[in-house]
Image (cartoon, rainbow, N blue to C red):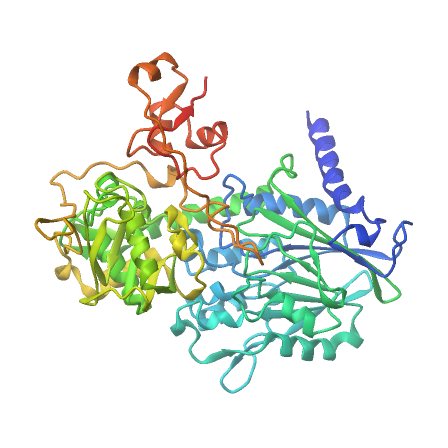
Length: 635
């Protein structure tokens, strides 16, 4: 058995490596991600260097569906290092923040993991600053490899980090330059970057290349810049303005470049998506002090299905999770009232917890209006002591607060979307702050919301308002597609962190027993008006454990491929036909979705998992099922 396992591991390594080595002699003209000095089909000479790279992992350390997790990544990295000792490992930022694994201890847990993976260098992304730049500097002292950025400076002009490092691999000198997006100035809380500035990455890259080009054989830019059309400073701009960069490892826009992209001056740009869904691989050959061939590819969970996770990394992650259990019991606040977050309440009306959360979002961001989808609130909080674990149970997804500059007409369209199913529950039902409105349930969907007030004044369809929302709805989640066209104006940390701080700020005595009446049900003629609010029940309804439910993000909503952003999945255009109970009973392996159903609820009723139902029915987005839809059940 051990011999077979060893043989299997060898075969898997060979398969992974052949994927990138098998095209080593290919004509560069046939591969958008291959660059070289000629078009020969003879074997490539020179020293073979492999650069493995990650970006935008956002602390997704644990394997989950297509996310491989850090233990699996480490297993793949081990095999590459065994096959080619001339291997470097680089990280392109947005690494130490994003899930509670990181945020519970301000990123220190991630530092332990990446140190074990033995990275050779990293660049800080905008989310590295979510704990404040001074804390990032302290974290960098614990990181056992260079943290690089040429364009982050203090007000006196001194750099916060070293601009570049030079690594020698088998006699080949490789210069690695770090670049951080200037968008960090507004894509983290502005208080986190007070006292520092982000200078022009192209100008800093040019200066660094001029300084080291004569000293090295290879120049690698490690740039957390991205390729979003809405961004001013991108990887494409840098390689256009700066000759002499051989490889540009990109991040920030979560772009998936399966074979890389050859930019200006022959620079090969590589990017590995997000959340450990991919490990990036760049192979280059250096002869006589020159790069004569270079190519890029990605390894995903399917290709690495037979690779065993690194046991040491897996054990480290498990031990950190064990250590964090007492942190989850830490008391962070007191509440004098029950805070209503039951599923059937937050998806069908305003609740006091929805009010509190959106007030917290508006407080931290300074926005005119805050809106979050009720489906993102996963549990209630009982009166009394509130622990960090309680808050994370309510908000388990690690969603970030972002601001958008939104036209009044799109705000109205958003409210129409959220109220479309009312009074039936819907995950998209809006919990709001800074805005009030009424719903006429007798009116047609899309024309039900009226009497919209912002700051006590009627909504102006042509005016621009600052909206605080979560990063799920901001990209069109829960059919808030009207938001997807707007670039982020700012980022303000996670929902759970904001809620904790706000409860501590306002104090227990100010918390309201009932919702504030921001949403009301009323005829457009004004004849009747009743609150569309959900009272706190005397015996709170039980809620399934949120960590077992479907995460509030997926590859279609959270990923931001560039330069063209993928559109959110469209809702069904054909009217679903309601199946009779008799017809349903006739086929015991088919379930007809009822109003209020979720894939998770259906899976529990039928002894399966939501993942199996999603796969069996080829559902692109497990959140989007509709009444009358027929779902096949496992036999």
